[in-house]
Image (cartoon, rainbow, N blue to C red; front, side, top):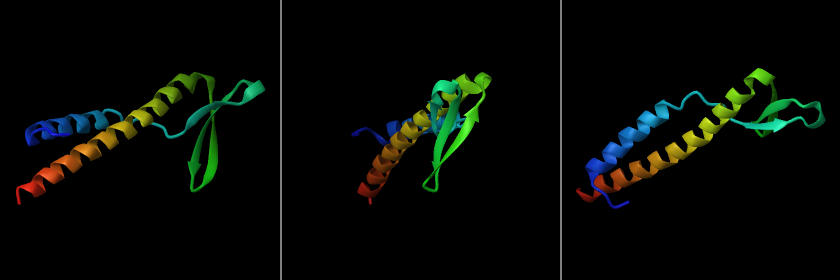
Length: 94
């Protein structure tokens, strides 16, 4: 990552803000029920698949919220990398 501690701290603060702006999320996948025309949200909980029926009026919002979950995962991964770089820098000065 090779950047200054100040730049990494700025990036960390930006990531924290973005994470806090994306906390209205749902975990799971939106799938079609086939010929019935409905949609379900499926998630794995303790190695078991759970399904929740999605009403037609909720479909766009559910899709938006599941996309936010993917974005949140990417932001957390990026934050972890920044934290690692900061930790390495702190330990180099000791």
